[in-house]
Length: 69
Image 1 (cartoon, one colour):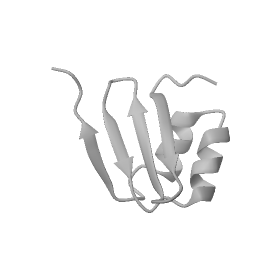
Image 2 (cartoon, rainbow, N blue to C red):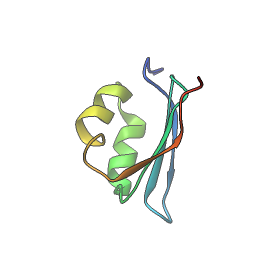
Image 3 (cartoon, one colour):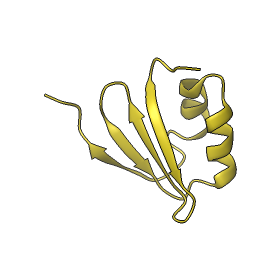
């Protein structure tokens, strides 16, 4: 199901990193995300709700790309 907040994401199993692309254009990488969390995120009917509840503010992160000016 399309999300109004999240444009896409990718999970790197080798490094347990989740890269999330937001519709705003910002890209964030989350570290030490368990594979189970990424799998449930992939299946979630509301990506934004799952992200806010189970990922945001729970894992260390770094912004990869800022929103266009």
